[in-house]
Length: 452
Image 1 (cartoon, one colour):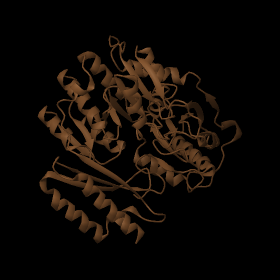
Image 2 (cartoon, one colour; image 1 turned 180 degrees about the vertical axis):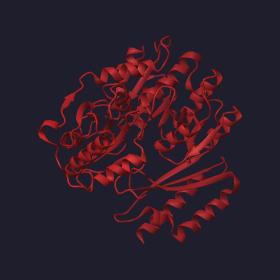
Image 3 (cartoon, one colour; image 1 turned 90 degrees about the horizontal axis):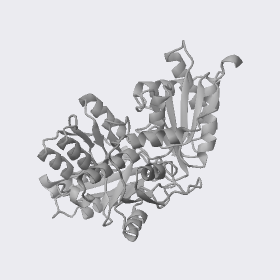
Image 4 (cartoon, one colour; image 1 turned 90 degrees about the vertical axis):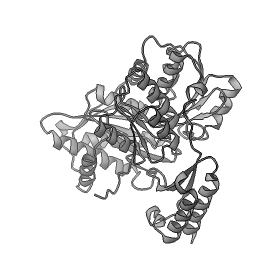
């Protein structure tokens, strides 16, 4: 079924441009409330709302609250909270759903909406379809005595801080480790520092002064240069970079090398396999590196690729009954402790391994040899259709030429971004192949087709 609003990660776009407008969010809140009420009409319903630090979050929080109240649904406001924290609190408060107001790693001018079910998992396609259908109905307010009430949960940060700490054993202390945290001026700014300090680490901060306009601006997991510089300058043991809503993480080792999601998956899988706690295999995505698949195979750990998007990783984990999966971008699902990707929790799993094995990250990653991988993002021109461009014979001819040069030693992946107006071009191959040059050739062809 073609969906008008929901993408791979909720609804996202530029603030002020449909559907990211106040009037749409009012209607979306109402439609969500009506769908929840229709699914169980015999009781009162409650929805949690949290947000990241974008200035537009205030506007959309109020609009969603009004729409839900008009549908007769109670609202609990969490304020700025990481996306995985909202998932956790939705579960523990036994709420009917959780709503996240965030555009993740996008700049402040964008915003979006993500939903969690009562179990703290991404809302199912069937429920999203029902909400979209309800948006076509006229907004009708319930009787005055049935209007939803709103309250603020003042201790939400403290509850999530304690949860994060509980995901590693009590005996594991981070004492003696110096850690630089980059909070991307986003939703982790008031959570992550407390978590790591209370576990004993010496913490310094960058990207922890949000002003509503600076989220993800030259900081965070998509801009790691500032973190690399800080780690090297301060002689830290580790750098941790979150994205704007805290569901993804990138690490930097003591020598300034980036540790991406594939590296993190390898570290956690290897540790849990050795300790007999892995519970099956690992789910990656089409973007996961050759080297990760080879390293897991060498450990006799099953590996499966899902489509790009953490919801697809979660689907494959559930289908297989596995616990660990994620994306190279840093969405890591540690299903033994959390129901969704969680940047803070994933970083803690790696730090716990460092403490147990008394080794730096560089030594822990010695068994993983990744193939060179080049990724180029091509921005779409206004009005262009990514899938139409990707289907053009001229582009398919260039892809075939590049694939012929790679042979059996590499691969090409072109895909439209599910969160931004981009076509992502990825080329991966053995070290002797010029993957950077081949990726640039493909990107230039895409750009030429968009212009012509």
